[in-house]
Length: 386
Image (cartoon, rainbow, N blue to C red; front, side, top):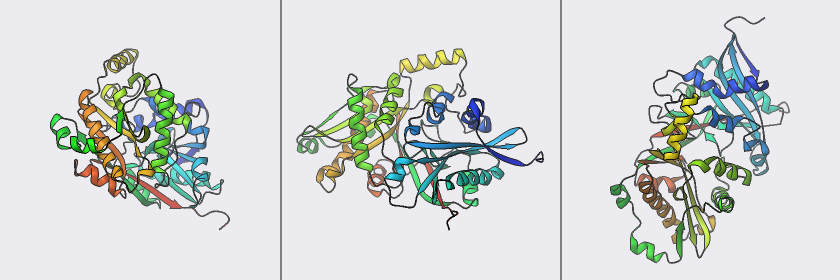
């Protein structure tokens, strides 16, 4: 028999507990001054096995922490079989969706994730990822008081230290930068016209709305080539990128997709998504019927003030060439110009690895300091065979 104040961690069973798991952060953090809940619908698309493209190549188990009849925390444990195939490193499993206000439940939740992963001979646990490196990444350790951004996890400041107290070490920090969109900023960071002319057969285009599946494949191929071998990277699948663009279709504009071609060959890509919090932030995650009408109206009017670059990459074949140095600057220049034609006042360049000095130096010429930091953690697991 459990004591009333005892913490019990148990796997999520059934549709009702899954629905609770999905909306739990909203219940835990409600009323905190800096927290704005995401739409439950959006979270369901990431976490529900019937909807999330992750489960085409991954496996997960969800856990809830309870004190008596009250849920006080959650975590996911997951394996991405693509990640296991692509690495010669220790067999690595992930945790994610870690949310809690009561630090006493953080270690029991992480213990549950570790124990679940051990049955698959996992040697190292890394996270948080929801559900892999192509989803929400890291625990927010700085920037809680900044405006929320689509696809960016929010966590109270005590969560990072609680993860470290449970025996995890910092793996890497991920930085996010906020670029102001204005005519002045655009001119200050413009690729000079004479330099553009010297690029010769380099062209830039947007999304072809009548060829979305083909443009999705181009995006996937460039992104996977650009980031292959990067820390923690798991390749995007066709299913994931098609699902992403299909989900975005109601809010997708041709200008949000920036493709650079050299001699008619696609060589660089950037994809910008409008910040859904701009139109949903006051609807508390689960809109009423009237709230859904408001949301639909705002989306139709494209009432977004900010956006985020979620995918950016330059093909590896350009490494070491003059183009490889110029094209990232050209992408940012194009994003600034397009941001002015769309209603965005700010564009976020997010989740830049602290070790990626090339991209950081380019961005920090425009924005000297990151405005949000998310931290990834890892821990070596003792297995039964050791």
